[in-house]
Amino acid sequence: MANDKANNPPKNQCRQCWYHAYNSREVHAHLGWREDCPECVDHMRNGHPEHMIVK
Image 1 (cartoon, rainbow, N blue to C red):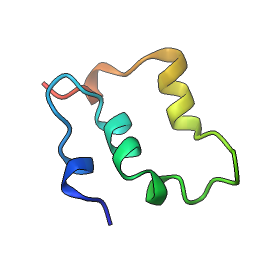
Image 2 (cartoon, helix red, strand yellow; image 1 turned 180 degrees about the horizontal axis):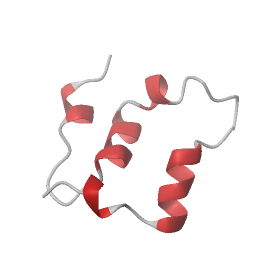
Image 3 (tube, one colour; image 1 turned 90 degrees about the horizontal axis):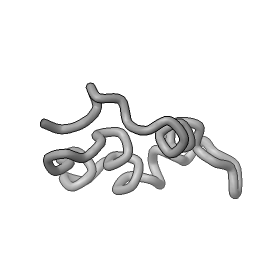
């Protein structure tokens, strides 16, 4: 279960990245050992979608 920090990103932060960073065990549980998360890699390469940034 996600903690309050994972569900409440601060202003100007990406909701998805914040959630993945602070709830990574649950979010990344389906990944194999040393396997990259496709959603995280997408944000690293392409940036954060504007609609995911906390205003």
